[in-house]
Length: 348
Length: 222
Image (tube, rainbow over all chains, first blue to last red; front, side, top):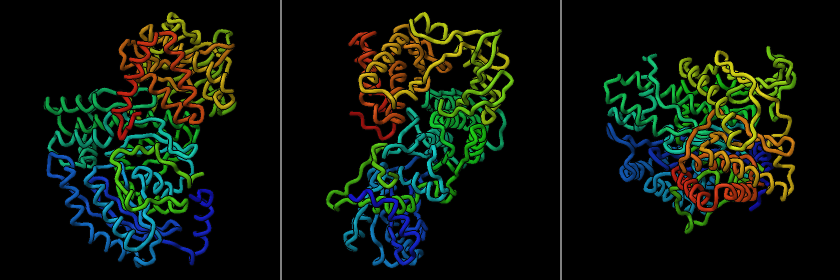
């Protein structure tokens, strides 16, 4: 592993266009199958997707989702390559989301990536999906040393980089923010992901009903909030009133623990990434909070805040600059792979 | 204090520290040098929610700071509670936060500090107090003693689960903010904890800590 080359390689590549190199990345951790080609100077040349939508009232069925991904894969790969204008022969590596995620879905992405890497005889690079969210966010927002709020269906974590890892400063002790919203929405008969429908319903209410506000030190807990919200809904309270109340409560909790991490670390940047970053009420609360600490809030553009191939391709490139790769016979998937277990040599 | 803003003027004195939920101001109270902990309105929260939380935490913190003394743990002396402005006025503790101390400690000093830290946490737990906010920023080394502050999130409880949550936060802070010292510090902390509550109780709480970690996403507890 040639760790020491990390930053210098990136810099050199970005000032000499002739040296530009290309990585293809495959994202397939949950509902989204997506492929992207990025260049070594940080341009996203393509980012095509196919998204599995579950039937109303239910969540992702892992096997059904994987079947949909399998069917969509050839076209998504071909589209990503065509849009990018990069011929397969010019790819220097293929990256895939090794985890965390749903096993059947992860395996589809792994199969596609292995096939491409072996036939092209280029390195295969394992990428942690969550690290991908953060690194793509840093690329697009130009954040240097942020406190990161990662909020999605799979994660609710507050992180900061130090000493070769993204370190967890706070997280949910049970449900993620995405799960809270999805499970509440599904109880009302919606299909996952429910975040947008809840945000829209909430916008038409200003009737706040007290719900459990559970901050435990740097951590949050959403299970009591979910139960109480379902009870309100079952008791005949309107969906928009409960949506408003659940958003105000849950987002204030998350903002409070992010503020704690900001005060504790003394950093001056906050970056929000992950699917729930798309919610405007959450981002307005974060901006309000950051102002008090003279910190700036970086928002990942909507197109790239949710799951996408670009997060895998770009992080794959960063890993490639440090010589990280995995032999095809060992390229399994890891459904549980916490991001604070991943070494980040390119930030040293 | 890591984000001390220097001498910023404030109605009560000058701002020492802007924490997540409160401004900490050094000023004068009836001729005494005092710290004003002011829970300012947080505008990102709905007003009704924010007022309830600030009032509850201010009153509760005052009660629990007092109670912690009965448990044998040092906390600042409280001079006044103003519910209207969610302000606590208390003794100014001269010292260094453990957070700012860790990097400068030798191995044996680290052992000693965290053995004591663990013992004090155990005293709180034995007395039925969960601190609720046990980060290294909330414990101050002063005059050879450890002084515990920030009881706003504390809970009266003897449940193993709650005591486990307390220890989990120390672990999260150590691993997250002091990765180089975390293994040794945790070991000393656990020994200090066990020295007060006994091996059996200590093992039970640590076991529960593992259960709590397992509930987290993608966790692999070893």
